[in-house]
Length: 369
Ligand code: AMP
Image (cartoon, rainbow, N blue to C red; front, side):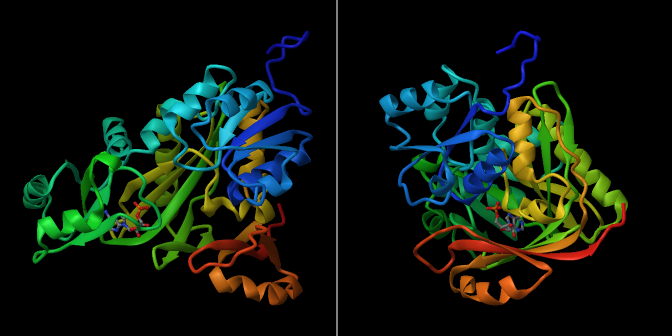
């Protein structure tokens, strides 16, 4: 709402609603608090990482319409930290208060077919792909795309779940069954296998007025299909980095994102950049920006959704971010003794294999500028 000076920004002191209670929400709430905002977290348990640091919480399922309406009435703007918040939930809130990025953006990002189709429509390359709705359609798609290829669920896949590698000897019926694709996932998508040299991502912030700021491309290294380390900056030639940034900004503008868009890409040996997927929220590959950036991705999100000018996205120094997964969290005593390491623990009480418990950012030499 404009104030008496015609200023449309949501000023510090206002309340930001966050859908989802994970570590991305926790770090958003901490950044928001630094700027004088309160955060109201909508999640399922008071023990979740974001709920632990929030000014207020609503503990309810995403389909509890009474709880959603009461939440919407108590916040000035909403955002989300979790990829699969139902679109109906977002639309219900958006009817009462601004939601950034919008439900329309989320609907594209939640669906692998839509996100790749959208990228191709605006001239951005992806792996070749086909929609598949049955084992027979998979067999036909394999004949077209060739092998090796990758079958994924259209929705709800993350950390390699719902993915099946296809090679010459693969039985399509078995692969279809193994993928778990079906009506609940809006079917499957067959993608050509990309023989990439490295995986990178770029996070772009954008305001409603159309100002954008992109972080430097970073390399993401995975272990057991889970992000393990982020190398800042990605070791790629300047021309490749410029191309990656350009792709991310075009997607962010094309989708009309207000907030953050993380774009995951493959870089081939020939220097070609192919988009894999987009996430309209803070991203694991942006954790480094808290300690090595001039503005963190979390602060950038708060600025973008509240209509404040964006901060400087450049970095103070190079960095390597390491996720502390499962038992790796036990190394916290060593990390806390290291003056160049910045330790972040998410307050999760139960350590489980594959669970992101915290991260550490190791700082490189500081820039003089
Ligand atoms: P995704 O769930 O799409 O992010 O995929 C998880 C991981 O699987 C990626 O980070 C890649 O390492 C790998 N992957 C996904 N799609 C492909 C592809 N088309 N070609 C090669 N590797 C892929």
